[in-house]
Image (tube, rainbow, N blue to C red; front, side, top):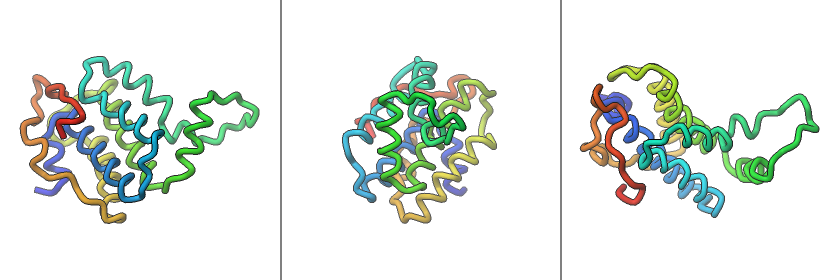
Length: 168
């Protein structure tokens, strides 16, 4: 079974966590572990430890690089202090880092408003494939395959158990 197939057998929280670990590896490789990225990672990790995923969605919508870097036709549109800060942060990294960040947000939010299906979910497969492509192209070390072995997908509890960032 290929890597994506294995990941699709994990709970949704474990898929998000695996993706965040890939982002951490990418940032470490690129030496982009500054305070701004730590704040972003802290926010992303709350997906694994909270039942209030609607709040996670609201907060991640404010940091999504596709939203922050979107060139609005109204150049005079006011920007918040957070947007200005994130524009500078995102301009200092390569497209692969932003691709992984956006894919994490997409994986997490897709299930909040879409149907949860077992196994083969095209949107999640697409997002995980985007992450995999960046990791392969940039020679990123994968998180161990068995890291989330205890967090398998279940139709009765698709998000899986809550867990903290430091556990992995």
